[in-house]
Length: 89
Image 1 (tube, helix red, strand yellow):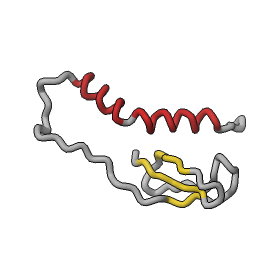
Image 2 (cartoon, one colour):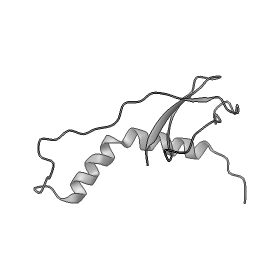
Image 3 (cartoon, helix red, strand yellow):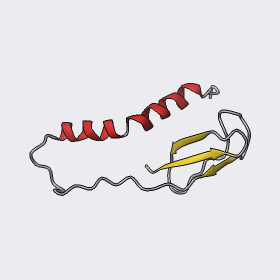
Image 4 (cartoon, one colour):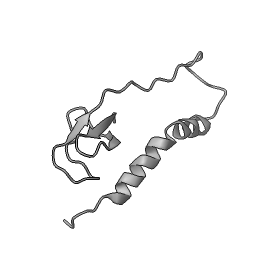
C-alpha cells in the first residue's frame, strides 16, 4: 500500500498515512479539525542495488533490512494508532 504525507492547514502537523491510491485523508487527529489535511509532494522510496537478485543472503535477513529502513515510519504509525480513540461498533 502506498504511503502519503499530509499536513494540517490549521496546526501544521505533518503525518505519514498508508492508504490506497483512490483514498484520501482529510481530518486532523491532533487538532481535530475537519477537512484541513493537504497532501504533500513526496519522493518515491527506491533502493538501488547493483545485483537485483541477492542469492547469498537469506530472505529473513533481507526482510529485516527493509524493516530497519522503514522503522521510523512504523514507529510513527504505531504512535498515531495509540492516539486514536475508537468508537464501539
